Image (cartoon, rainbow, N blue to C red):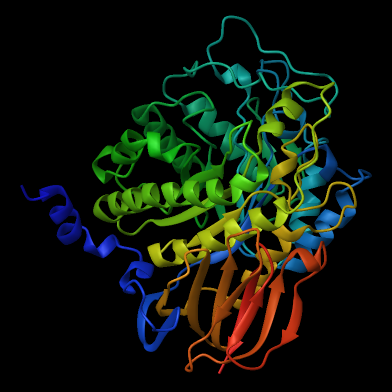
Length: 503
């Protein structure tokens, strides 16, 4: 009896077969083949990062100066800024409900870090995301408290699943006043009183909430209505601002949200649908040895990319003019959960080689996102440290210097971007990821060693190397190194990310 399943897979899904499988077993052809005359994709993809507010970014803290200096030196576009829920006083500007007698608008714990962020990103586009809403906007069994100390972590602030104002106007006005504070020099509170800020920033984008599948567990219908009401109110303050939406933590489990939100018929006519956003973190199991993570990270990344294809196809069908920002990409090690939740727990340090491996995974996601037509590819996050997702940090929280994850982003940002042509590339060695780019600065290869052993890449005669810039174990926490190359062979260290200039 014929194996009909095998026949269907071979014929119906041939377009999804890895290029590596195009090489016949035992073939004498070179491992790497490049056709510079054949553009497969024109890149739209901008590499960038997110900055999540925490005490280490406050003035006077250990990591403040080095982190903002690194951010300024990077000079990235679409940098996402997130004052987030573990520190209510650093994220929420009106912690108590207004009365006829007074309001509680207060920015003394919010403004300093934001001012330093805007200074470090001056001249570049930013994405604001004040995702943590005042708890009093929600129906809860009792009022939600918060620590008096602005630096004390508190994970239980975002309570409630139903807004107290079903029209959502109250919440929308909160966000409009917040935008006015930063763009219009101040805000007029609920009692008609003007509060001066002196700020006149111009934000390119505002993301409406964060990880709506987790924070308050939004239903598609409720979030879509909320988005429409909030963006309409904020456009009264700044008619030029554009918006990002959804920021799903688990996009593979959130299909109903995309199906509903992306359908233009479910929005008020004229609503701005500018950017869709969603996230991915590789997450090894607690008992997994580091040696296995080199496979886990890339396997889980491929699973996320399958989800991204599904989401992007849905977006192109329902809202073809929307762009996409993958604005949280990274790894969360099991130790982080213990470190975050158990204050007395002393987390184990990240395994040797971890930062290079995590950087290599991000570089791999950048290649694949460019093939999908993704507009923004955001690495998460600038600063993490024990008790605040240490394995996600792009800064060495012991030395306050950028770590290899940061330098991989810098390497990509300095060499690739929108307008590059990805040309037909096929590499037989599946332990490597290789993509040839035709850029305004010449022909380049982005090469990623996905494994913990040194490997050699043999180049074809139409791509002879002249130099490479690279991040590898030998570069430690230093900036990318540059090496002159001759001939057809490129030596790669474990988890190395290299940009090879070719002629």
